Length: 108
Image (cartoon, rainbow, N blue to C red; front, side):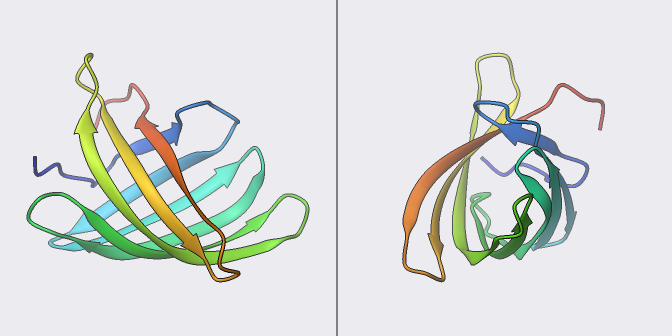
């Protein structure tokens, strides 16, 4: 799988009001996030030939907390054809986890 991320709009698998807007230029991928618990956030990274994104991110939460870390996002296709990214993340404070974000139904 080698998806194109330019114009992709995503939300968490369990929607919470946050959305992300992705851009791509060759292997360079970047995104802006906002809404729900996220006041503002940025991601910047590279996309491998398999579509996997390796990136760093920083976000300011609605409560003022600043979170930074790295993530590795692996794409797959949902039954309805939308893209889902499984994100394995590690924060600067050492915490880690897995999140899933899904493409919103949009025209891109």
